[in-house]
Image (cartoon, rainbow, N blue to C red; front, side, top):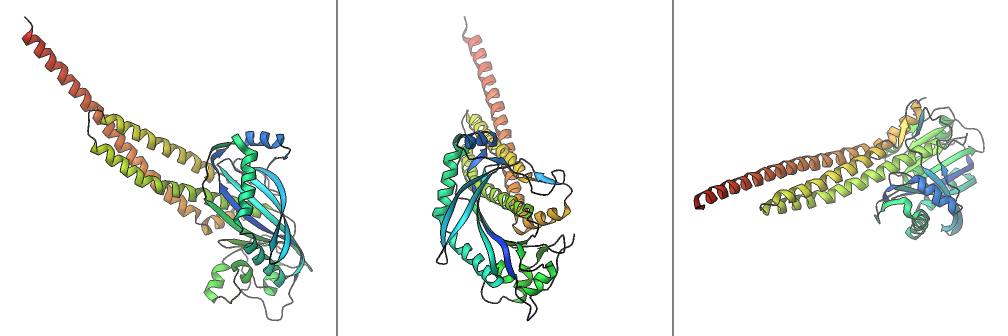
Length: 380
């Protein structure tokens, strides 16, 4: 296993290869619920003749790398879209994750396209597949199919998209080094038509990997290029999981961003209303915060364990690079910091609630003692 270094630009005069077979895969990921009951989802989909299947990595053995909880995959109806003035038919598939995320993939096949035409097709698909109504229609179709399998469904608009250009063969056998010598990956990875600076080019090409001499993976923030002559889809699956983790961490980061100011207001309101029963208000607020922390912690742990990596070092490097590139770890740290603030607030509220109950008991004891004294004095 080695990271591909190659050249940053093709050699002048190099013959442009023709993409014999490949595909352009547009991913759109949605957070739709607190969780998805995958067993129930399989039952509902089977009742509707949707033939659900539990997914696994294509060629990597389960003991080397596998999903934490295998998602449920299903095929959707193919769609026809207009891309650059041409009608394009795309196969549609979906994947359901137990932590409440849904991935929809639209795959457009490519055959016998010169490299320059292939790059134009990738950019055209990227622009053409931005139509929100198409994704909304497919998502609503899935919501209707899943029904009660969605646990605490939400109408959140948090979503992620990612574009992957896949090549399975060229018009001639090419090694990764020969491919990089004969084509410029930068226009495909950036979507830009103007020439980029050398610094921008190096940054775009920083995450490149090869395992065999004739395969290549190049990652960027919103696009990836995969050259895989053996038809292995494991890299694509790994990139999808990394995007799903990004989606969920974004969701919980935004959730806690909205929760913290509300929490401060509730704490301030509870402290302003100092009554004999204030401890009960503190206790209710503390229970609410404890429930929030428990739920977010449980779901973030599920997200963190979405992919189990043990032995496959090559896929592990691609996976860890994708997490770094997508800033998943930074978002995870931000979520943990906000959870720590809420935990500290919960502990403080619990302490105030306990202190309030103690004060109330002391006050009641003083009243009882006073009453006993008064009764003793006025009794004949």
